[in-house]
Length: 262
Length: 273
Image 1 (cartoon, rainbow over the protein chains, first blue to last red):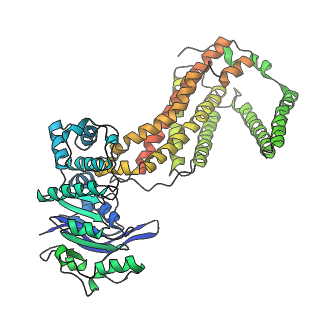
Image 2 (image 1 turned 90 degrees about the vertical axis):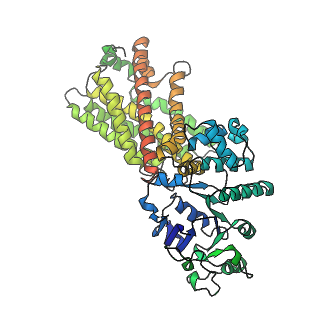
Image 3 (image 1 turned 60 degrees about the vertical axis):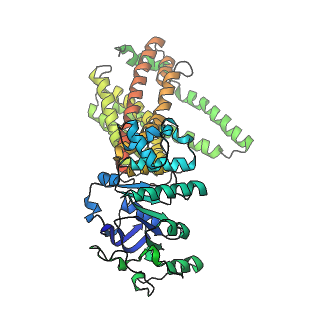
């Protein structure tokens, strides 16, 4: 499996504050890759870098082998869709929202995206502001799907939803992946990472880490400064025949290898 | 726009306007009333009232003596244009002071004020509404520029506030692959509407609610009220056009600066409330 995204020595500094430190890992080209880490560890920032809403101050990122800073940003964003933590619906109806992403589309085309996000076409005429939290988030997913992306970046999309809506969205994500969609899913929830992830990258304090480091960080706030690859409990690389940076440089774990100490 | 009667610019009305130093001193009694009220109610504004009154008098006197030179028919008209340039710069500095959180506002305000003044004065003098003379250039430009300051400040501050508060929606639009002019359009439109509403409302209410300054001044100076109305109407149209031009120039120019060439929204300072 080739690399969907490859991050090589990525750093980000904002206003003199270092957010990311020398982040190196690859996202395999298939399934759901979970970015797991405690709040404030830099997971969302990494997602924003992949969509080019932010740009790194050092290092490089490539998408399917092409450096993303050499791709047209608007075309990249349509290929790499993003669903945000809080559902952000635009004023107007669900149809208006979908047409923002796919101007001139027919109702049938829009209904197809709604169906993929497990929403009925009857919501087309509903005001987006009147939808429940779960429906609004699925509308945002449908709106992102309207650009026909190759990969979806999901930024803790269930964090503001009740358990039922969360289960519903997770099932929707899984069905999309079964139909060939790739996903990078950010979460701080170990159980959700277990349920959803085919691959896993752990981020702690702005750098790749192991799950053991994450647990230690959550327990006492301590962080190892050295490269995570030096950890003796490093899991197997997610992608051994990857041409990009070897996964062993950054802790990308296959779910079956989840260790007991996590 | 109607050809305005030239007697309005004639000096014979000046005699009616003169109140002399005695009249000015008498009007200071009203400042005394304001100071008295401040002390009575413990507002602690008396020093500020006295300082503002003295400062206004000194500034107006200084400007008055400059105007004496500028409006003199023997003074080259280039001096009046230079004065307009200085007014544009002073106004831009004032805008920056009132909207310090807006990046690069000074240069944007200079451009907006220069463009709008050029258009407005071009109409006034191009259509021969007034003769190209210092006595017309300076007060008309002053009115255009002075009235534009408020609109400029509101447009710039509102735009920063909108894009800052609605950042998630702007970024959701950008993340769908919308280019920045499209992603920012709803917020730019809303900011410009807010900035222009005040001027539009005061244009609607004129005559019914308040009598504007130029007209009041002309009537006090003895001009025929209908002539005064014509002058005022012409000036109001110019002010409205000037404020609208300023607001649009600063709105579009500022939006361009708030996005990077690769369609990212820059980080914005939080506005002071």
